[in-house]
Length: 386
Image (cartoon, helix red, strand yellow):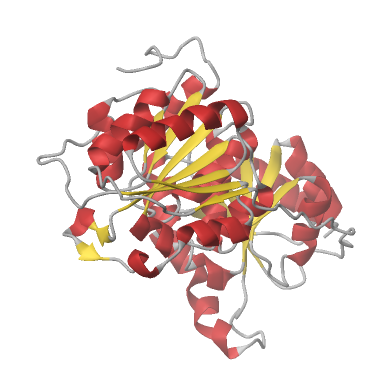
């Protein structure tokens, strides 16, 4: 099939944002996306799904590209982010290890179960035709399905796309400008107090994304606001979701609130965030050295220098703050100066008893945030609370 023609059909349907991980079966479609569209190269396939999901929330019809072995990495966000939040993505997944076609041994099992996995995840799918006219019809069908807020994946067999030469890519290098390590005693506030401090700085241009577990639930108790999103499941994906949203909504201030267990799970996302470098994103890590939401089991964050890691990846600012006052002062300064920023605050393991859960379903929280972002006159709440 003529890859460029298929790409133009995708553009006509509004699909201009792509994220993915390379695969030889998809390389020509990936090359087209890099050449002609907005493409974010993710560290892994789960991050790609989260990045594309963030872009969708920000108003972009988004595409994810991956090898079928990588579909296993994307299971968590597809089932616990896209499904409950009703975030529809168009996916292209290769069929390595197709039965009867010689391939590497590591693809044998995945070739047998790829479509079964999609079925189990309630993801509608079709084999992509190699005939362009038939593929055009399939794209329209997929777009109609996506309009109903569910993902749709095309399973791509070997030899589907013809050659697209990758243009010379300009390597982007971003250098850390401010690196500040711990230099004083830690106040060790509770997560609740830290979230209250963060929330007090927000304004009508701020979007707050809280990682899964008690972080989102405590933020909900502090103030349930139109410009909040409370992640459920998809642990480790909040920074990638923030990246996609920040890139698609550069006029909004995107505040990503993360936890040490979450960040450790997908730490490669720091490198991706830094490479694409949205100046309107601040990434706040509340580190209590524990999986506190699940009983207080220790993480390994006590042995990790997150400040140096974020700085070496290319975050403009990578700063350790020691108290709620320092955190608030830094957030106020960031609202003026911007720049991709990583902030670390050590917190205690204490959390609020008998935490409530959001009364709204995840997809309702997403839809409310979309109305806030796009300033829809039909939005049902004023900024600041419900």
